[in-house]
Length: 214
Image (cartoon, rainbow, N blue to C red; front, side):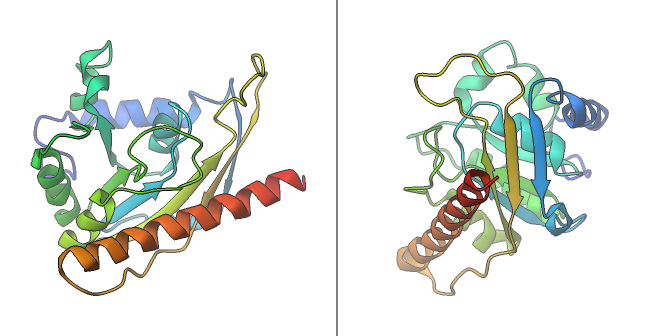
């Protein structure tokens, strides 16, 4: 570890620069409204769990959380143009469908230093309705004792059959920390994962209802 709530190999100054850029980067393209930003903990270990419907979700949240944030990112992103930058700003590559504990172990170390780790439990982009979730986020929280904070984004995904949009409205809803059920083994992990999935799915429905009424 770097001792700065970032994984080994990160450049803290570069991370802070990227995060600063992220605070304004999307302003020309989206009208972003954050609901209950006060629920974002300013310090302490946090597993931020979020739905995932568009590529921009990760970068958008990275700039919005207000503190250093380490996200679990699909390994394919490290093979493209951003491949060199992502490790330097502290992001961790995950090989989907492959048994690789290294990114999870690095994420636990970040949490034990009091850092924030962002996870998209769906595992891939889709409708963002949280119809399913993988176990990684719940495992991280149970292993590290970190707070689990649910966040949902709506409006980043362009509806099918529509053309280019001019500054669409994007809503980000921050929920209250989750209480994961106790219990060990696979059954306990499955129950904790379902708690995460159900909470996010409920928040998606809540935010969709708010957006449809305004």
